[in-house]
Image (tube, rainbow, N blue to C red; front, side, top):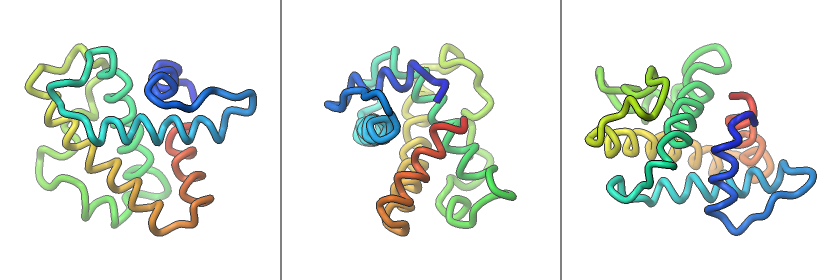
Length: 139
């Protein structure tokens, strides 16, 4: 994964320590970070987390919606309807966000993370871990 800021934040917010091989601990740290954001209050997210949050939001859209020959039906049915869907995908830098965008970004992000967690219920734990790793490493 090229997003070192995302991984550093994931490790800093989790009790997982990096190992030499890295893959298993990356998954655990990423799961902990996504869980942190899933349970976060938008007014309490530190500014230093907005860049990694925005990039992970874009990563989830790319790999859940656009990967593998088009959209997944599960993703479309659970995504936000109408013109407001994916409204932050085009943003290049978190500094382009307004303060009132943060709750909306976090709400969309939570819907994507919920979908990713839904795949954990469908797949075996090993396949779910590989899916999570895939969404993070191929960005």
